Length: 413
Image (cartoon, rainbow, N blue to C red; front, side, top):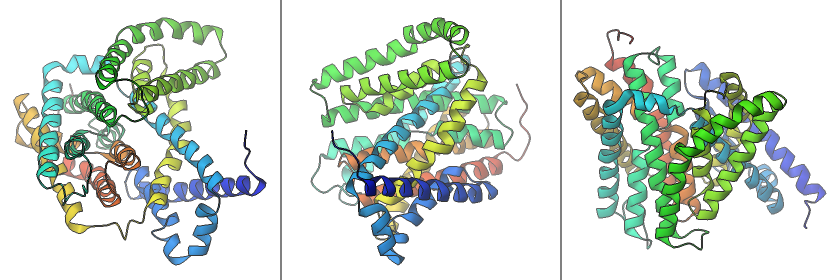
């Protein structure tokens, strides 16, 4: 087994230190301006990457991030763990009983908030594939990805925005959260199927992969959830707290991630489903969830978001028209689709607009989706930059636009 050399270890620790330090500084700055920490962490990555550091201090950039392939490989391992853990805590925020309690309204908003942006995201890239950056790949697969990318909502960002606006406990707040939960589960399932079309890392046939994926999803949301609910009290009683529940949660998160990676639909889907099943248990205390959130959000999440900026040059890969087109499709699809779903559920025009703006927040989920597509050769760097910018813009604008739409108080349920 090959070991890291002395210089590789030094280089890896310098990379980790630089990434965490700048991520913390810029996250604090972003939060001072009432923006999500992820915005600051992305900016820290752009500063450390080829866009800024590589342009103005190329020797330093070369030494830190280009001189040791082995250190970079080890860093990539950290980043892979980070993205799996990010989807795990996103799953923890899904409360299935909340989805069921909102019934038809949540289903209407989530489905229309999926179908309309999916249709727009599919049609335009399909008929204007060269403009969107498809060179010689599969046009159908590319368009399916774009449809999925336009339709997924970032649940953690939505929850944070609603809390900031004091709307989380309102009827509208609960409805938006429930709709985003359904949206996330269906969206990630679609993306997992798209990855299986690409045949990445699996010896199974396409139909076998889709069948096992659907069966695994059904199992985790039904029997798996029941098993977890039965086992958790024993873990809390017999093992040290919170060490027992935390270590076993992480272990099963990685097992689920390994299983879906083996299927060829990416590790993140398994981690997300395990998070959903675990987070919905009444025996998974809020304090335990908070410990997991704090650990991942302040250590692993910054490493992932900073690593985005290290991969590509945002200046040389920035295209104005492409970015504007992606922004237009993303705003139109979510606001029209989710807004129409809300109006069918009995909300007035302003409230329906607010629901559309709330569902428009993309954030971390969009970036994770884009990065996986980039690494699998499905999209190019210019489209990835456009998707990252879209994720930042929708996350930053969602709260202010909801506030603008709701100029009168909403009664709590």
